[in-house]
Image (cartoon, rainbow, N blue to C red; front, side, top):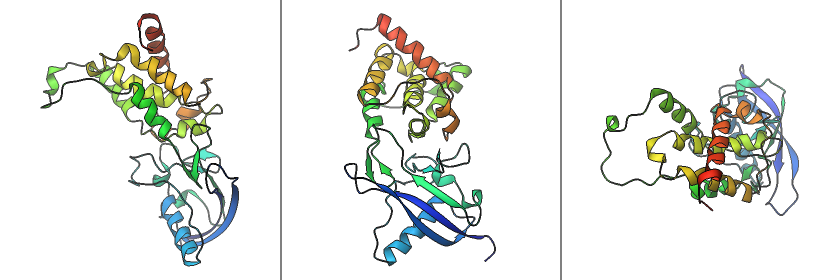
Length: 254
């Protein structure tokens, strides 16, 4: 049928983080160019189940580019060859009939493999728990105009808040650094009035937790921002460095 493709998939299969994994080859046929990459994997898994074989485990939830769970390393690139999209937003028209596609999980010590393409990214949650929060009174929402914020600061905070915590920055970095993720979360809160009470300790505690989780150091190659599906800017890393230095000089945080 016109528009349908036959593909060869080389997919990483691994029972858990303690066992050795390997690439296994599958042929998939009749794939519509309008399918998303995850829908193509659904087709593969339906076939494997019909053959009484173990389906490929992979993370997914919203399938709308919001949750960041669809973390696949496709032909050597986090989320695949199209810039500014997550795996679930990648469509098969980005590939050609007869292509061989290699699919692997995120590769990082801090992201242990759960099974196949699914990794444990709870390290990000622990970094957020270390300082990625604000202390404000609960109750009715305050009127937006009661907290004057410059447009420049609001735009910068909004761009940082676009980070979905998918971990593509870690997967893209040769050092498996999480600096882009941490900087986006620190930057977002440091720019807003609500984030000021914890400002002096936030960067210090979150960076300390990032190091404790085993993420590598940032060497400013820029691969993280280039592969980020939300195009988070390296400028946020510069802001994190300033916040961290200020915390070290003036804060009592431990």
